[in-house]
Image (cartoon, rainbow, N blue to C red):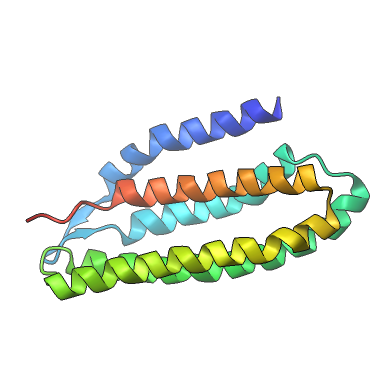
Amino acid sequence: MKKMIFSGFVLAVALLAPNIIAVAQTETAAGVDVETDIALLRRNLRADKKKLIALNVPLTETEATKFWPVYDQYAAEMAKHNDEFYLLIKEYAAKQKTITDAEAISLIKRWADLQVEATKTRQKYIPIVEKVIPGRKAALFFQIDRRLYALMDLQTSMALPLLTQ
């Protein structure tokens, strides 16, 4: 049942995101204004992320008492990476039609660095989470968490137009 809820949510977001983005995007002199779109998507998914994890990772009361404070620390660290990524996206959107080759390479390198830092944060938290919940539940948490971040990446990618040549 929980897997159906998670799958249904993911499917709904995947199907609705392009429509939300298409309706809300506006054209500026420098490129497509995606700031409002991405802010809305980020807020919606951040709000639902904890609920989705709670629905899909079966925790006992004792496990939950230990897990959620660790999760909140992890989520706060991941939010910092996502906030930096969001700033990068805003910069890209502002320069999209006027971006130079050097700026484009700088942005893509910074994006790759942010992905590496997020992965390092996940690696840092694997043993921490494993100390508070059993290994299978820890692995399930990270699987679900990674899928949710992949969904956020997909939403962001769908909102950003490709560079034109």
